[in-house]
Image (cartoon, rainbow, N blue to C red; front, side):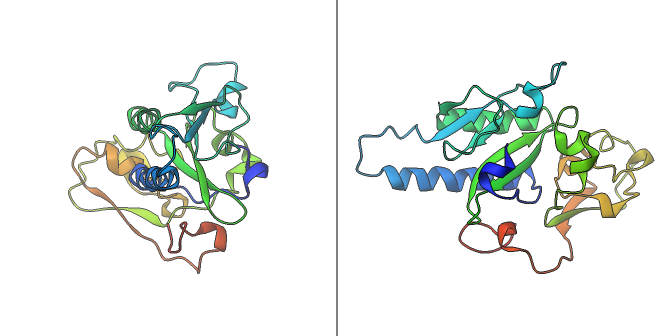
Amino acid sequence: MRVERRGRPCPWVTLRAARFVLEGAIRAAAKARAGTEVSAEAGFWLSDCGCRASAEDKCRSRIDVCLGFVREANSGGGNLRPAKVADALEVLAEADRHHLVSRPFADKAGQVVGICFCCDCHCAYFRDPALAGSCAPGRLVAVSDDACDGCGECVPVCYFGARGEEGALAHPERCAGCGLCAEACLSGAIAMAGREVVEPAEHDRKPGGGEW
């Protein structure tokens, strides 16, 4: 999504958190439409991912995974169109199937207006070294317990390079808190826990207050 159109991006979040944000947007949209003739299924926008659209090779996921809560919240990748609640939920399912990383975006007032679902093969935040350090980590960090059997299933879904051989958290400072490793863990040895952070900037806060 085009950051310059909507202010700064929020920190990376888990897919569960992205679902929470989406459910809040669904409730807000339904409340705004109360007593009107607007369909209860309207109110969202889908557009093609700008990173995927500009690439020569094909992504493992579908290309229209930029979900906006307002029309202006689009990636600039084209194919902007209205979306129903079912369409938005299907994008979440696509993110789950293909291990995409959830990244909310907020406007300059700090209100979340959309979510990008990023892949490691095309997303500029992973592919462009100039942008790699511009993404703040999420409010969670992965932790492992003794149940880890070294299967390594978490390694290929750690796009931030925090996991070492056999799944060890070799570089915890690189963990962005996306939660993909916990979802991939077959033994249930990985959990997401709060990390120690400084007081968040205004654009890192949830709509209505609180932190991600």
